[in-house]
Length: 117
Image (cartoon, rainbow, N blue to C red; front, side, top):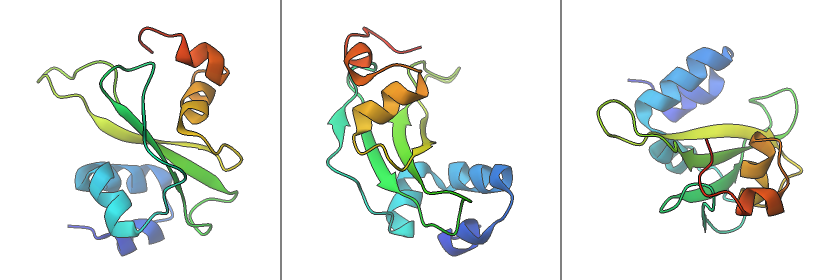
């Protein structure tokens, strides 16, 4: 029953993540009014899915970050492909570059993946 205001004020990162996942990342991003950085793009490492990058309010973390909204490459046991957010450095301004960073790759390498795992 947490709203975005309560979630954003939660100091414990793990509790905050659980609350966001319960609400749903797509709804959280919309309800919290997170500013999208650029357009959403097709995920080259996860065919049929998209990547979107958002600015995170400065009060949430000790340093500036962005959140990459992406979809799990592997379905859960119930067949659902979970949507989730990953924090990335605020200096990254492109969703593909952000996804590449999470794998320790550069964007050119990530674009060549058939499937990120």
